[in-house]
Image 1: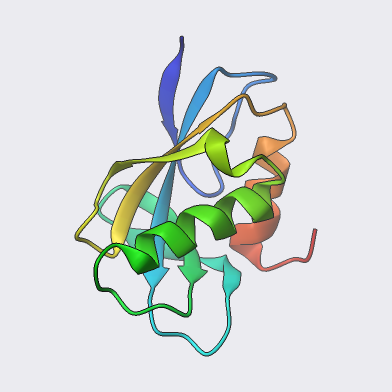
Image 2: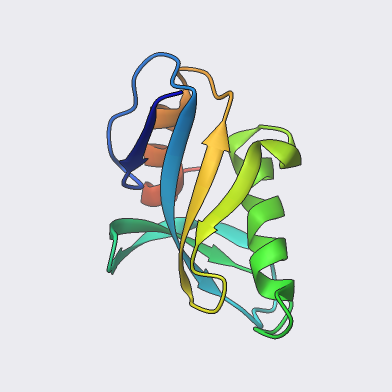
Length: 113
């Protein structure tokens, strides 16, 4: 199984087994939104705004589901790698197609997909 970190606008190969996506979570937002770029500790991170507050893992779970929806993969394909108690997280995305790079780039640049 291959594993590597892909910044929000980074390149992804045609069909990786596992891709790590850097994310910056903004809990307590009025609406759920996936898009934008944040220069975080893991490089360029995709910004995900979620409704739940940062308590009891609710914001992390909402971010995981929002990322899966935005990348058009099943929720079970997205798992948290690191950052459970931080706004800066790494998520593992498995079984993604070659379109991941383009989807991440559109999301980072705020372009509807």
